Image 1 (cartoon, helix red, strand yellow):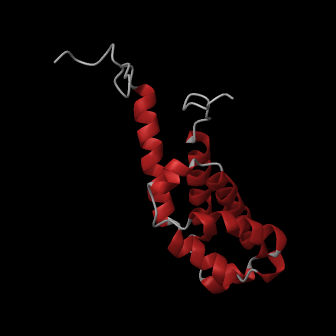
Image 2 (image 1 turned 135 degrees about the vertical axis):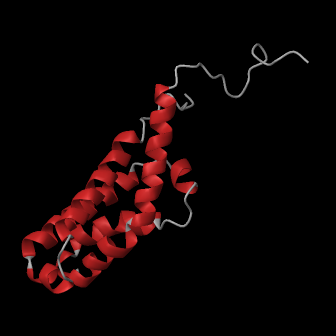
Length: 141
């Protein structure tokens, strides 16, 4: 049986970027609209639904260790909204979509932005770090 190392796992960076780009698109789509205008615009609602589906699916591919660093984010609900939008789309009210975009994406955005910055920082760091220190690299005492 082969143990999976961190090197075998795909980077979460593309999924973080997908989430952040979807959030940007969602905010741009509702910018300047009232909830009434949004509710009356089927195209805008469809775009928001698709953006939330992308966020949902991308969140499912983030490692559990990343999600554990942000326990206040409702990861199960984020993953679950995609199922609702795909399978029960006729029951999704415009005001729910509106509330999610206007009020509930900021913590997710902040977490994804932070994780993206960390990954990019360490990806560009050319120093070789052996962690944890192996006996051959441990300083002599």
